[in-house]
Image (cartoon, rainbow, N blue to C red; front, side, top):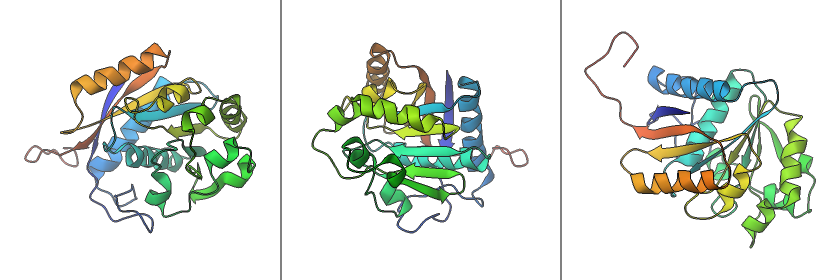
Length: 235
């Protein structure tokens, strides 16, 4: 298990429609190194040649989960791995908004049998990075995610990608993240500096462990870089 910090991004926007900052090539050194370190930690936690399937969640909403996960996906794709990012937050999806894309058709439409998986995959949203957006907001997200159809979809797509990253809802708010955790190899828990409460984070980890989920580690988001102690490019 690891603990990784990611600093606040202060770079131009990557894609039209994004109100938050996404990882791009001219980000400052510390920001890009933070995501490279996170990428390396994930790689060492899940060794082997098979597809690495990971979901990310947080204790509560508003902690920067989706933007951090999208940046991690971009970082992995930049290293040459083929990545699929799935927005499985079927209640308050964020990836379509962050990338300026349409969310429909998406995951909910596939699980409801309305479209085939290949119709929902957006190819090369970023080099080496495909995305399945959330789709229409369904009345029964937990039931859709708990079906054999969802598990079968992940198994099918695992043969096409080196990484499958699934954006899950906050674990203390709804049960969806615990359902998704049983379909992946490990879970990342995002914690935001100055916002996440220790007791909420402990409750989130307990909820995941009760379902048998493997918690890979924690990502501390929104860290303010300290000034005055620099050595070359290193803070």
